[in-house]
Amino acid sequence: EDQVTQSPEALRLQEGESSSLNCSYTVSGLRGLFWYRQDPGKGPEFLFTLYSAGEEKEKERLKATLTKKESFLHITAPKPEDSATYLCAVHDFNKFYFGSGTKLNVKP
Amino acid sequence: DAGVIQSPRHEVTEMGQEVTLRCKPISGHDYLFWYRQTMMRGLELLIYFNNNVPIDDSGMPEDRFSAKMPNASFSTLKIQPSEPRDSAVYFCASSSTLSSTEAFFGQGTRLTVV
Image (cartoon, rainbow over all chains, first blue to last red; front, side, top):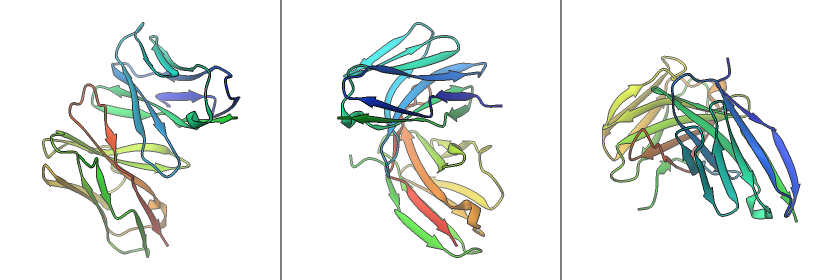
């Protein structure tokens, strides 16, 4: 049973075209939900941690939100340099689960 | 700080050989994580340490895998004997606390077992 599901698997946007990535989870004891960015050939880079439903965090063109069942990563007016794979992970008791990621491609 | 340092960056070995991957966490970080990433299975947590003590190794796939952390500045992940299905990118990450887990990842070791 998948604990973390990300959608879509891939997303192509034009520069400036805002959109959202989804991360749904089924863990029972959420201690934190994390968003990472991963560029090809590199390790994931931490973006945000969310702890409770209703929480929101922003960083430049990115905004992460959390409900009891899912999280969204909103990308406003993306630029080509935002192209990367975005990973979602959840901390459930002593376990960590990663989603398979959304590969974002922003065309100029 | 130079960040999390992993070595080697690339490793090619023959099936049956022993492989040792190395990691130097960020100074002052109490938590160290070993992950494996493949196209098929994505990013999987293998084991993590707190203050050099293994806390959860339930992600270690088989007895062929072992991890140690002899001190706060060094950890190893060993595979003996290696098999082609172990081919993956192995990441080490460290963080200051578990609850926030703002983990910093190393560049990874790309392992190819032929």
